[in-house]
Length: 104
Image 1: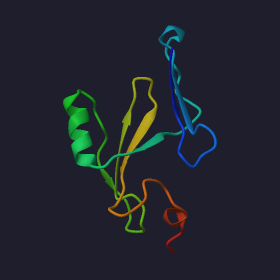
Image 2: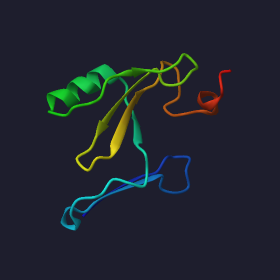
Image 3: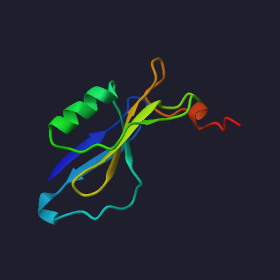
Image 4: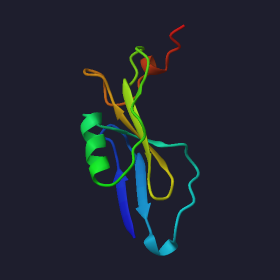
């Protein structure tokens, strides 16, 4: 078994726990819609993934409302979707309340 834990400096507890148990067999996708991962350069990341034999989805350009301008989805071997997000220059690496505000 392999266990990886993510704890952000300002958080009192672990934010993300990843467990890999090959002996337990395949995992049925479920429990969450997708995992978002920020990347510095989406085009370069997609090129590396494609060169490694993976098939990321098309790049999606989002609205001008301050949210992430570019994303791409791919699936891991178990079918879980992973969203790669390139945030705009100067934007914090994560979703803020301003990103969720209704622009209308």
